[in-house]
Image (cartoon, rainbow, N blue to C red; front, side):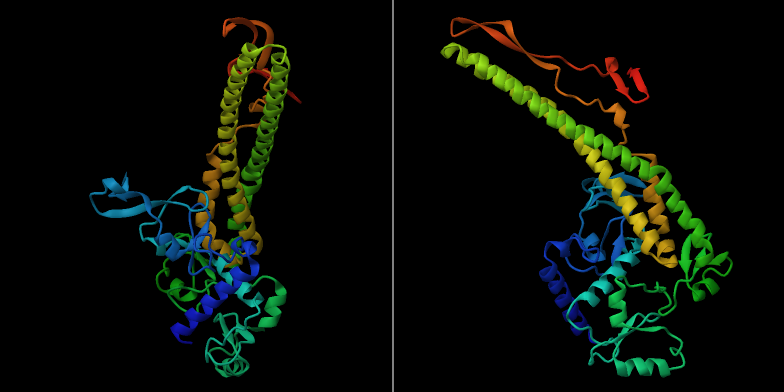
Length: 412
């Protein structure tokens, strides 16, 4: 198939996906969140978010490393060893490898999603060999779509006679495509081995050449060990973290609602008191409401900041857990091992660091520290003595008492 025809078909598929699925197309696992098109050479960032390689190349460096020292782009004065960019999805600072964008892990799960999505489109898929007929078969070893004529020729050749060929219609009905992960150095060779010293999936030819002195094991023999390591981090550390973050976020939401209810109630009391006075009292009423609004904004901003931190931490952990679970559930042995390194680094980073307050440590504030004293002397307004003052007590965390099932202790 000519390069121009491939690009034209790929462009039509992207337009069809976005036009057919609308907003759902943007959320598809086969669509890049930067260009809103189907993935092309998807690369997995250390934060476990995937983008097209070209989209990552277009990101402005947040910082660079020159001879191992981290500098801002404006301070760059020497040779750039590597760069740090901001993830378009979560705004995390991620370091690019020394080898550049091509050194990032390829997201084979995203490639699976792209092919599965193209099969679900109504538009027919052309044969990858002759470019003339509509493809009805697919060779799972060569990863090419074949028309009936090319499929028969593929079976007759000695080199490809043993390849597994499936009907595209059957692949559509499966819902998810399982495809082999091929070696980038030896086209047609599947990554079936795992080199322990290099922590890398390799093909038979790689094992016989570049890794001949290394211990290489069949992927199916080591997947249990490495898959269990990923699963252990998720189950022991990150799943409980998700629960804690969700509970803490719920408490913050309750506090926000209570704050609004409390301020609305106080505003009603203030208005009822102020109606019995003349213009001076009305002026005093407006002054009290402004003070109350200032207090509400101050408390609300504090809660918003806490909520934003919790939401970001929850998003980071959920993203890591979702990707790890999808990798373990949907990925083949080679796919899991290919993404194992970046996945474990991200999961361990999430498990060992990050904003993770215990739900009981977030005091549920019902805004009772804000109160209105109707008999308190407020001096004079426009020459008239007025009463009614707004009082806000500062909360000292060191003197707060945590109460809950099995908990009753003073902080500090």
